[in-house]
Image (cartoon, rainbow, N blue to C red; front, side, top):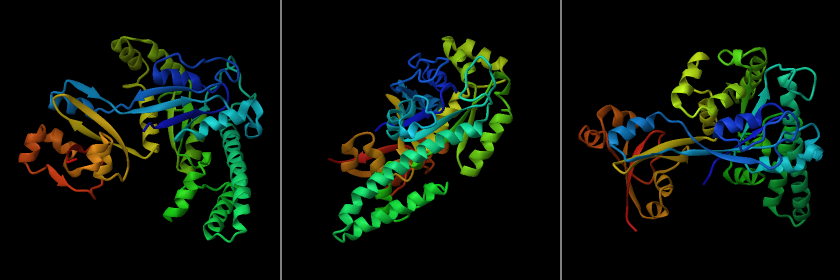
Amino acid sequence: MGFKCGIVGLPNVGKSTLFNALTESNKAEAANYPFATIEPNIGRVAVPDNRMTKLSAIGKSEKTISTYIDFVDIAGLVKGASTGEGLGNKFLAHIREVDAIAHVVRCFEDENITHISNIINPIDDIEIILTELKLADLETLQNKYKSLEKKSKHGDKEVKNQLEIISLIQDRLNNDQSIKDIFSNEDDFIFYTSLNLITAKPMLYICNVDEKSILEGNKFSKLVMDKAIYEKNDVVIVSAAIESQIAEFENINDKLELLKDLGLTETTLKKVINAGYSILNLITYFTCGPKETRAWTIDKETTAPKAAGKIHTDFEKGFIRAETIAYNDFVGLGGEAASREAGKLRQEGKEYIVKDGDVMHFLFNV
C-alpha cells in the first residue's frame, strides 16, 4: 500500500520546483506560465529517519531500507476550477486520488515571476484554492444526495441516515466549518470515508519563501502560520529555489557546504517529507538483523498481527506473538541480546498496539 501526498496550489507558486527538489529529479516542468504541469508527476521519496543509522550499525546489517512516501505534483488550480476553468475538473480528480494535501503558498515577492494578481497575498491565494476544493465537494455531495434520494422512497433506514450525513456535511461546508472528525459512529464514518471528499483530507501548508527568509520566515509566512494554527494544520517553511540548487549537487560535501553558508544544518525538505508522513497519521516500526535493517510504515493504532502483515500476509494469518523492544532500549542497551537479558524484550499478543519506533520480531505458524 502506497501513501500519496499531493502538492497543490495556484500556478507559479513553486510546486514543480519543490517537487523536483524533493525527488531530486527534473520530472516536472517548472516554467513561468500557468499549467506547465498537465498530467501529475509522481516521485517516491525515502522518509528521513536518523534512527535507521543507529539500528543498522548495532545490527551490523548488510542493507538499510527506508520507508517511502509518494509525492504527486498536481497542476495549478485557478478560480473557477470546480466548474472546469483551467482544466480544473481534471486536476481536482487527481487530488481525489491522494491521501493528504501539501498546499504550496507563495510567500515571496519577485517581479520576474508572474502571479495571478498584482499583490502577493497568501491568505487570498489560500482561500481561492480552499473555495474550489469545497465547491467540488459540494457538487459531489449533491450528486450523491440525488442518487440516494430515489432509494429513500422505499423507506430504507440506512439510506435515510446517509442522507442526513450528507446534509450535515453540506451544512458545515456552506458555513466554512471543518468536516474532519465529526463522526464517531463506525458505520457513519465508513460512509463518510466512502465519499472521498477532498476537504476531508489532512492538509499541510508549505510556505515558499525567498532565500533571506528561510530561517525566520517573513510577513507572508506569518499570515499563513496564524491561519494554520486556527485551522489546526501544520506549516513548513521552505525555499524551493534554494532546495533545487542543493539538489543539483551530487557531492554530499558540496551540499553541506551550501547549507552551512545559508545557516542551515540540514535541508528543509526533510521537514516537508516528515510533515507529509506525519499528517497521514503514520508511524514506523523496525526490523533489524544482519541481513537488513528495515523501516515499515503502518497507521497509528495498528495491532501487532496487522503490522506483521505488512511484511507478509502469512505473518498475519499465522500470527503467534511479537517480540518487541522499544527503540530507546534497543539502542541504549546495544541490541537484542542485551535487551533480552535486561528484561526489555516483551512478548506481545494479538491485541498489542504497535508503538512508533518498536523493533519487532514476529513468530508465526502457517
